[in-house]
Image 1: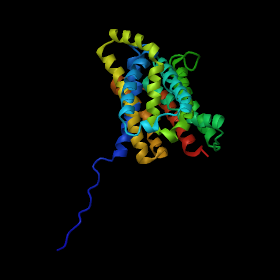
Image 2: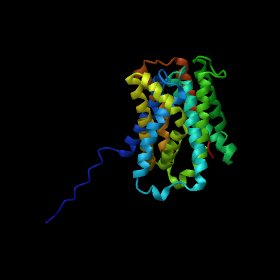
Image 3: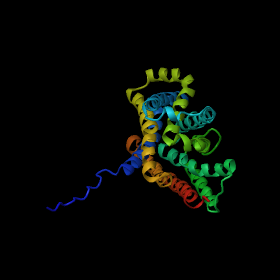
Image 4: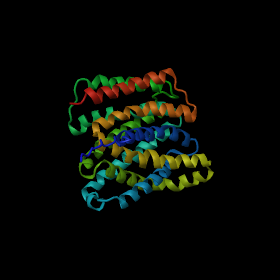
Length: 300
């Protein structure tokens, strides 16, 4: 009697691809959501509310996830985690939220996503890493793009202008990437992000009462926007990112992040009716192209 072995059916849902695309959607959504939320909340109270939600979600995961007790931060790692939370949560959100009061969501996404190029430069200055010659024109291209975008925003790149604040948020994010790097090998990306989010929420607690007071005066749409900011770009975004990295590896997964600014621009058009000007689109293309040059050909 002969038996026929049937081929195993292909997976209907490519999990890694779905996780990467979900990450893009979640992280892109933060820009139009912040743009909507800053109409009803001040920058730091908004961050406090957002990371109260995200911190509760990530704290629950840390309590319930298998292996957490064996992979708790070591005493020597806590100062680095606190610094990472101060840079990547408190300072980043203060500057980004402040900047998005005057800068459109699409423009903000292109400026903020110059952080990988800044990270490469900081790794040279702080960690002694080397860059190839292509990195420098790539960084110049990104800066030219940011300048074009800023020129289309109120105040340009003058001190206190929204575009400069968002560029500052990108610098804080780049510093955060460098500071957290030694933690990743032992704790892993998702667990490191979870601890940073929880600690960031704790650092923002002094502004939570003001945030709750502002929430009492806000619309239901504004309140749901803050909840969405805490759950989707923060908690679920990092969860999906960990799955994507597990399937593709860090370098290949990072290539999906070039989709974040264009996706944010489309979402801002659909959700907020923000139509980007040709100057913003050209500047965004230059900024994103510069980051691509640095990441693809500029690293030794």
